[in-house]
Image 1 (cartoon, rainbow, N blue to C red):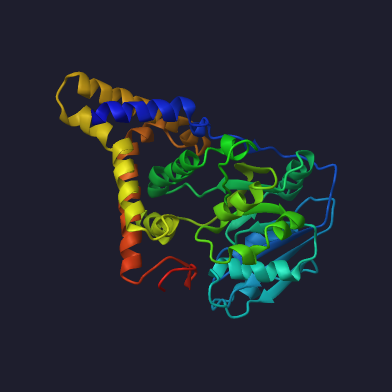
Image 2 (cartoon, rainbow, N blue to C red):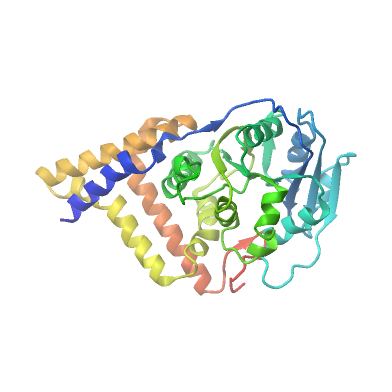
Length: 367
């Protein structure tokens, strides 16, 4: 019975899947006992609207050790470099032409790494602002726990109606794929990172062969985490000290964000796409169908019970984003939206409109 299988899956997810729903841990503000030199590398391509406050927030870090910011301007056409401003601790590099076989973002990051000298490197995105305590807190976590890499899921923008429906679900689904507790468990093989904030020891990066060793990686943050965790401990948590200022005012904007990389995550495989859609339908569509379309018998009751379990697991993420818990009722519809965007991602690829980062094709894509 498919409904019973869906129920068993939800019992596993709720009780045995690393408490993925717990929306934890969150990196606390802290002052490190050790203050190694840090180079902060920001890849930017046409980010004139966000780069000013991002760089300003990084230069304002309350960190006792030496640090500098390296902005890699990847051939922007909108005045990104000028909008970044000037400061003795800010170095602006003009990106070189991208060689074949590199993704655009990784190529930009690699140029920043080549220009850096510090034993600790922070990779951060050009749309994320940082509390003055952020860098110190990242370093405190790395040094106190003797970690090779510390990464955070920064707080995403969640103001518009579309964002309230879809952004917390984006975080929730990511936690479901990569339960943070398992990522942080050295005994588990689960590894993941969130590319917006990645603090890494240079020695760990060198040990895996640098970014060049993963220049064709389809999803660079998760690939990096997997390589680093093979030989050293990593951490992934939520951030209360870093916030994305990139808005997603309409559902179409969030659709584009998902479609940009969803099929890339499936390694451009039609077979994996089919398996993913079947799996998602089993997890997300069977129980609402049973609850709404099978009358008033045990199937409807079990469907409602599964719906309640799913909603309860969503509450902590909604609470983190200060979104009303009533939005949890819409989880099946939200999942359907993500499924459709994943199919749309595949269609884009097959039509030659593949995944890109700021008009730069991901490695392995047609574009």
